[in-house]
Image (cartoon, rainbow, N blue to C red):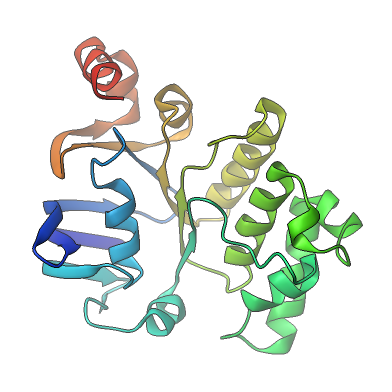
Length: 234
């Protein structure tokens, strides 16, 4: 569903990722792993049109979106849960979710909000509460929920477990499994490689902007040299 070919991206003269190719299929999880500064987040932000694409192509559901604005990419079926959550602290929970539905009809937005409340009952309980007063785990749930309101075909998740309690991480991963069962493709960036490998179907590993390993998650789980290399660069 998402096909990325020879993607190079960066900031001015700085190239953050070089000639990186990968794909994300419907109902599959593709994990992107590597050290801080490896180019993972730059790749994700480039997919959303927020980091300059230097070369290559991004095709979403047979639609070339390389030169499109972020609104067009969302309409094509991409949505992102950014690192650091980036919620609107002065808006309440429901208002934050409504922001994620700005490109869809009111009926789709409302049904999406109901879906998010089913996934995360705590957000329903706190729907009139200012988002900035939520716990870190609740804010991550809100960031995930906001991304789901547009009914994406591909959900991009950047550093899902960073700074969260294990119980909250478990809840978020359960939602990813549910989304996968509903044929939503997921591109997951995760520092916790063991956790990523446990849910992923495919894995790509970056180092200093270059792809140094790719394969199935099953291969990654049993590849001792890959694990040692990842431990050495994290």
